[in-house]
Length: 144
Image 1 (cartoon, helix red, strand yellow):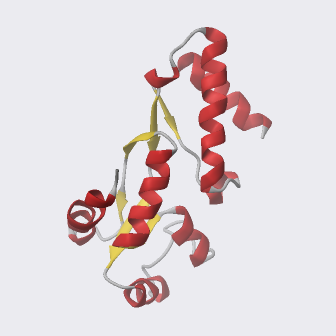
Image 2 (cartoon, rainbow, N blue to C red; image 1 turned 135 degrees about the vertical axis):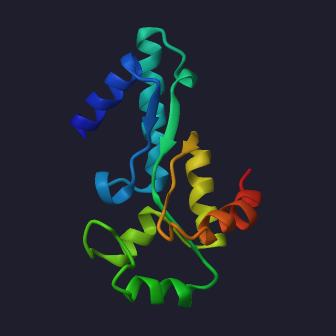
Image 3 (cartoon, rainbow, N blue to C red; image 1 turned 30 degrees about the horizontal axis):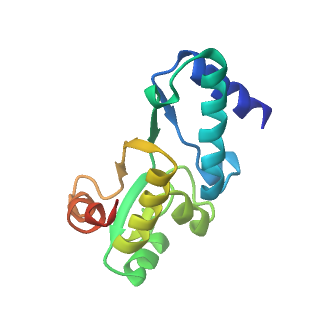
């Protein structure tokens, strides 16, 4: 946690953007991400910087499926799941914008609620555009 605090403190002093951490890499659950926003605001207040001047970003994998059965089939395939090794598929799905449109929208909304203003999505079905189109057509309209 001390490293994370040091990183957030450095972000407050020097950065234009701040990437919100994800569970699998930092051991934090979505509900705790708001605590990092509070820590960033605290450090910005200490140095007289408007914390709103720092853009919150997130860069997860993204794959939108028509059904949970399609998701499971993909996870079980040689090209499914994490690009960095097989790992736990449940953690991979939890930590990325992977699932049905409703599931992905819920995850995106959690990041928006935590102050995320930009997403850099890694579409796992590239060069196909099915997930990109589903994000535009099915997910984005659900985000407030």
